[in-house]
Image 1 (tube, rainbow, N blue to C red):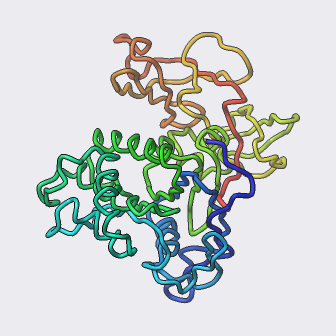
Image 2 (image 1 turned 180 degrees about the vertical axis):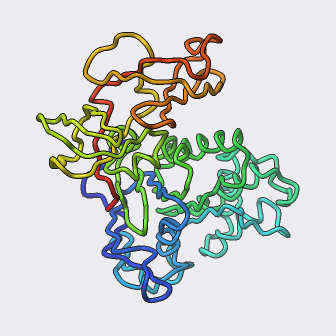
Image 3 (image 1 turned 45 degrees about the vertical axis):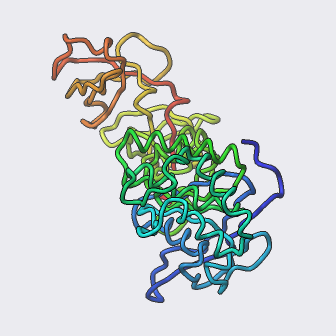
Length: 366
């Protein structure tokens, strides 16, 4: 989607959260959410992403700073008065109510006229393709069906903002991927603003307009999925988003946007100086496995002898684990036919990659 300029719906202004008065789970967070976008908060356990969502929902209070929704200060406003829809991982459906009754409940809580309830319930169930199950209880539904009901319930009273806390975490891989696309299409169709929390980077890449990558209570990078993957801001983002080959080294020289990095075994690798780093500083080199060419003469400065350590068959492609420049955990991806039965552990190979596919990044996150 194209994000409109100056159409901010939610702001976090220097928001911090501490439970013990010492360490900060969320640390001076500044974040602006734009109307109609799908923003994912992504990070490992304990990074602050869920606490950020809970503060926006009203289930946690900020220790300091201000959260606003459409210019309205939310600090100390109880959750039920914020007008925000919420979808949880455990569905949170009422077991004694039918599907239709579960959807009517938030309408009743928001004072919806009785004459409007039945049409709204029908539209919501049509939206998630569950109209035929309106009279069943949650226990009579599959996990995927229960999650669809939870999504419909969050959307039924047409909130301006919907929060989703790892809503697909309990589902199997195939159903999870199916519902990822369904939620994404619902968002596109309805134009509602969504804040989504996950620790699954592939899920974030699939669904999001923008992704905020959290570590130690801070946003390490906020960007569109392609930018995060292709131009990570630092070594943490590079390692957390997608697969990544990493070399620790020192920036030995610079030549415009390119630089030469000396890694631990003395090998020098030419890379893109993505962050404008100075000569002599410690850096991390990031090279995606799909950017590595195996065999052939290749072009450019980065050609290295390698030794095959392992072939991992994955159907449409193989991962080759190689020993390169002092690392025995270097991964290259090749089409399954390219690996071939003749490849054996210990075989010598040549690998290469373009300097533009190799990023020199700050050695530590912010």
